[in-house]
Length: 313
Image (cartoon, rainbow, N blue to C red; front, side, top):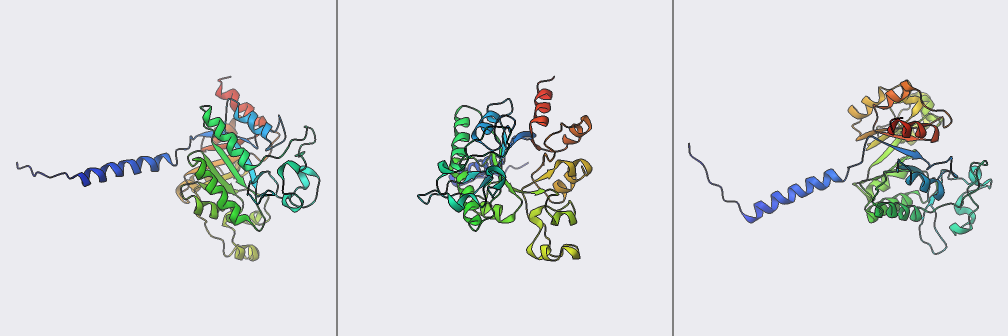
């Protein structure tokens, strides 16, 4: 048998090494720690939802992963700082009309978050402060997985979404912070600004349109044409390319086969579930179904169950 000798040049070696490094980096860029769970809006049994106190309590718990909501906010110097808030409108959390940017340009002057009247009010936190909090947690040796729910509805939504993507890149959070929204205009610019970031949509039943739409679609699949023609079967709906999907838990429990659909047909990287009824714990049968998913966003009744199971109690 004859052996053919090949000369290996320096450029060949460099090409192979570069290919290996690129492959390793591409794997690390989506190295989310699944299966996993997160505190929905921090620990809202301890302090007001989405507040620094609620988020810090969750980050310092036995399960240091969090979900939270963010909207746009620009300070008096014209710097975009964002705001950690579930609502675009101030009414539910503050009792005041309008949006947060209507009358305020200083986060320290905002009325306090009093969404839950049974708990003491808390100051609102900026997105910049949030990223610094996550950075400090990483410096302490713990990297939290963070789910950002993009809730901006104003005219600057495009600029805000791009800014969030740039922030994730600037802080190097691409491998443990991901973003979802009810609206495509919250995630499309973010993905453009940060192609390696993961963006997703939600399947839920609060939206008027989704009441007439198959659960095989998310809210970001509803186009302007389909909104106008929902009575004709949602003509104009399309399958928006999502990296992941979050499904409302009661929809998931009735239709657990949705996990296979989103993974195999829509080709998402992971499937998550979020709590709808925040007051009740899950049954044993529901916990068994949840083993099908990769990510769960829990409120205190379900999180306490999870932590007990994790501790083997």
